[in-house]
Amino acid sequence: MDVLYFAWVRERIGIPRETLDSSATTVGELVEELKAREERYAAAFADLSALRVALDQDLSDFDASLEGVREVAFFPPMTGG
Amino acid sequence: MDIRVQEAPFDLGHEVEAFTDRQVNMGAVVTFTGITRDLPGAGMDRMEMEHYPGMTERALTKIAEDAMARWDLGDVLIIHRYGVLRPQDRIMMVGTASRHRAHAFEAAEFLMDYLKSRAPFWKKEITKDGSEWVEAKDEDEAALDRW
Image 1 (tube, each protein chain N blue to C red):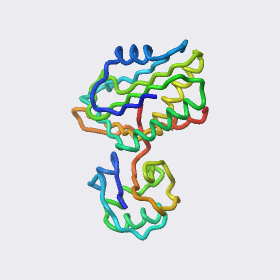
Image 2: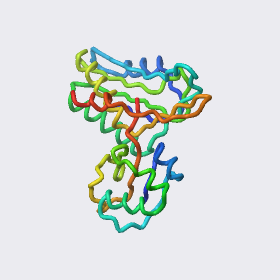
Image 3: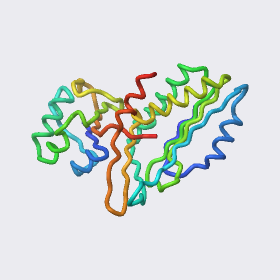
Image 4: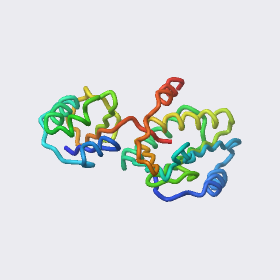
């Protein structure tokens, strides 16, 4: 699946997107996998209350299933307008 | 419905005229424009507006469709820019057309409340002293409760 990062999440992790082979079945599991990889991921995902997630470009939750999902995006709360 | 996500500036006067001209039998047009503010103290050099191509268009379309379903509207316009913005630049605008003034006003407020915290944009302010991501405000999230 493709994993995208925006705003300070992108800056902290250092890349805008990557393609992963993951066995995670939920967003939460994917986050744990990423945190275990490297310190920069652990830092970016330290406080999930400061993060939002979108699955295939729709806002979702950290306990949502990843079944059939092709694109996961992590970002801070949005500041449009 | 006219939804545009673009880097280029837009001509506010032209957009308001064009939106108004294409309405048929609508008694009311309401428009709102967001403008880049300067910052007190150090002063802002620029704002960088990041967005999520694809999801942005989806989110704005959903918000506009929700407004069309909820109020008696003839049309909705949303223009939102991304990229580098300077103080006084127009960031975005919404327009609503309705047979009834109250519907046009309320729908425009609804669009703005949802745009603020449900459309995937992120603002970064750059001064000569450094840069900072703008944090979402609790009051912006709370503003959704009234709808």
